[in-house]
Amino acid sequence: MKAIINTDASNTISKIDNRIYGSFIEQLGRAVYTGIYQPAHPEADEEGFRKDVIRAVKSLHVPLIRYPGGNFLSQYKWEDGIGPKDQRPTRLDIAWRELETNQFGLHEFMHWSKKVGAVPNMAVNLGTRGIQEAADLVEYCNFPSGTKLSDLRVKNGDPKPFAIKTWCLGNEMDGPWEIGTKTASEYAHLANETAKAMKQVDDSIELVACGSSSLDNPTFGTWEETVLDECYDNVDYLSLHRYYGYYGDDDPTELDNFLAKNEDLDQFISGVVAMCDAVQARKRSSKQINLSFDEWNVWYHSNDADNKIKPWQVGHHLLEDVYNFEDALLVGSLLMTLLKHADRVKIACLAQLVNVIAPIMTDTDGGVWLQSIYYPFMQMATYGHGVVLNSSVDVPTYNSRQFKNVPLMDSVTIYNKDANELIVFAENKSQHENADLSINPTSFDIDHVIEATQFYGYDVKADNRDGKMAIRPLASVELTGENISAKLEPLSWNMIRMAVK
Image (cartoon, rainbow, N blue to C red):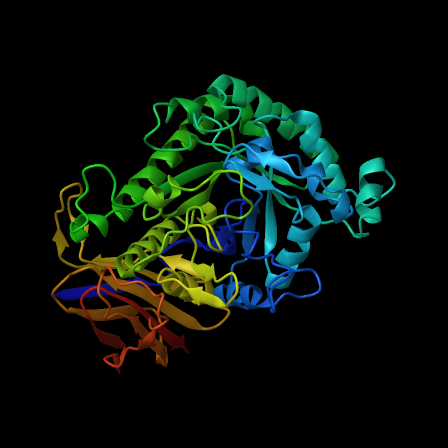
C-alpha cells in the first residue's frame, strides 16, 4: 500500500492550543481515593499524594485537568472539601452512589495540580446549586484577600489566589442521568446569569457552556442553538462529549469499523462548529465561539462489572476499563482528529486520568501500571506542539459497515518552529498490508531524522497488565534528498520527528 504525505509550511490549519492535551479527574471510583490520593501508601508524600502517580502523570505531559466532575459535580458542595480535614463531612454522592469523605477537596486538587505541572479547569455545580454559589467559588479561588471568602482561603493555607482561568458552567445538563437535569431554556438562562455574576467577580476568566451531552441525545442541535442564543456574549467555549466502543449491534471482531470511528468524531465536530457559526451569523457578532471537547475516550469494557458493584462505598472499582491494543489505535486516531480541528478545538480532556477509564492505573498496595492508550497520548502530548499543517495525503480508502471512504492510513503533520522540528504521526489501519510511506516536505529543508518510533506487534485484544507493551524504534525510515520514506507495519502507531534547518 502506497501512502504519500505532501506538506507545505504555508498551508496551515492552526496553531495548537496545548490545552488540547488536557485530562479529567472526578470524585468517582478510585480516581481520587487510592488513585491520586492515598495517605497510607508507601509512596505517599506529606500531603497524601502518591508520588508514583505524580511521576506517571508528569510523564504524560497533561497541561490542564478538569475537576471535580462529571456527574459528581451536579450534587457537589465545594465548601465540604475545605478547612480542617477532621471537620469535613462525609456525604452521600447520589450521582455515583458512593460515600464521599471530602478528605480530598479544592486545596488538595490545586496543590496536586501544581505538582503534576497542570493548570485547573474548574467546574461549578449548576444542577442543584446556582448563581451565588458559583460566584462565591470564584471569589474564594481568585480574589486576593480582604473579603470573607478570600480571607477564608488564606486561613485555610493558601495566601495567594489560585487564579483559575477556565471554568465549566455545569456538566451534561441535558442528560436524564444528571442530578438536576435542565431543559435547554432553563439551562441557558441559568448559565447566562451565572456567567455574568462570575465575570463580575473576575473578568479575566473564560467560561465553557454545556453543549448537548451526547450526539445521540434527542436534544442535540436544538440544545446548542437555544443555549448559544442566550449565552453567546458571556461565554467563550461550548463543550462536547463523546465516547466510543463496541456498542449496540457492533460485532467485537469488526475491527475495521471500530478503527473508523474517528470519522464519527470528525463529523460531530464539524456539525457543532456549524451550529456555533450559524448563531454568530444570526447575531451579526464578531465574536467566535470555540470548542472545549472536555470528555472523550473509549469506554465500554467495564459496563457489566459496574452493574454488580455494591453501592455506598468509598473509592470502589467503578469504570475501570482495561484497555487493549485496538483501543490505543482508536485513541490515537481520535486525538489526531482533534488536532485536525485545532482551529476551533482549543481545549480537550481525555476522560479520565487515573483508574477511571484512564491511561494510568494503580494497585492499592502496589505500584502504577500504564494502559495501552497511554502510549499514543503521551507521544502526542509530548511532541505535538506548534502548528498543524493542512497536508495533502494520498492513501487508499476502505468502506466499513458504518463508514465510507476511510483512509487506511490516518496521519497528522505538525511544524514546531520553536524546536525546529517537523513531526508526523501516522497510523496504519490496514490489518494485513504495510504502508510504504513517502513524506514530501515542500518548503522545509530537512537536516536529519531525530527520532522514529512505532507502537506495534500486539494482538488487538491484548492489554498491558503484564507491562510488556512499549514504544520501539522504527528502523525503516530513510532520508533521501528532500524525501523521507518509511515502512509502517499493519496496525501500527508511528511517530517520525525531523530536524528542520
